[in-house]
Each structure stands twice: as C-alpha cells, then as structure tokens.
Image 1 (cartoon, one colour):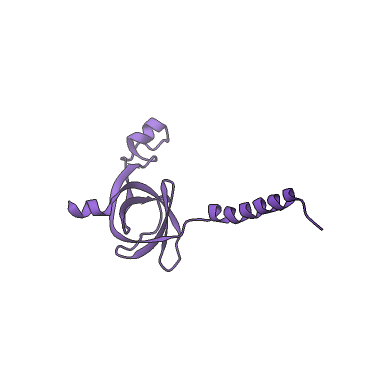
Image 2 (tube, helix red, strand yellow):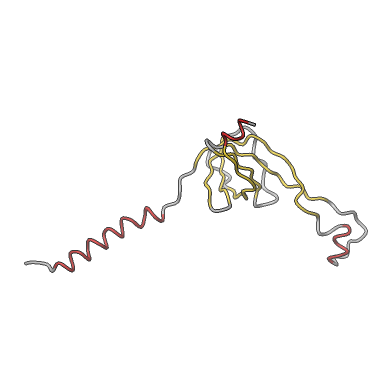
Length: 136
C-alpha cells in the first residue's frame, strides 16, 4: 500500500517544525560574572515628605524632603561590564566579589547567586566592553 506524496511531505514539514520550535523557544543559558563594586546614587525624593509633598498634596509639609538612595552594582562579565540597579528598591544586598549567574533579557538582567538562590531582576543602566575599561 502506497501513501500519497502530499501526506509524506506534510508529515516531514510538521516534524521539522516541531524540532525547530523548542530551539527557538528555549531560554538562553545563564552566564557567569563577578560583582566588582556597589555604589549608592540618588534616585529621587521620598514622596511623603518636604516640598514635594506640598506640591503633590500628600499633607506632610512639616518634614524636610528625603533623598532616596538606590544601589548600583558593577557586574564584570567575560567581555562586558554592566552597571545595574535592582528592580525592587528593597532588594537584599549582593556581596561584592562574589560570582553570580546572569541572563540578559531586553533591558533587564536576571541575576542569581552561584548557589542558585535569590533570583532577582535588575535594570541595565550602562554597558561597556571590558577591554575598553582596562585601557583607561
């Protein structure tokens, strides 16, 4: 009994598409990098105090404005140096000098410690080649 050529080619095309889909949908593996530095930088004002509260109408005009500080980290990878900031303002501190696993996802970095715990998202503030920074 002979099968028609159309069904055989259709079956081949479906099989090829099924094999290609997992490779396309697969997430990138984590790369390794080292946290080399942590700095605090100004990232806005506390909305519940000072002049800003008067403008916004929050009712606490008796207090002085508090400058909010955000943690900026320097992540050194094999070929790139990233400056990152935690997406969550109250995230735990990353230890400096420790190796982390990271994955780039558009404008964010997904970072987790080498032991696999504490997976967090970070905004990428700056990025530069590692070779360029060694020359300066």
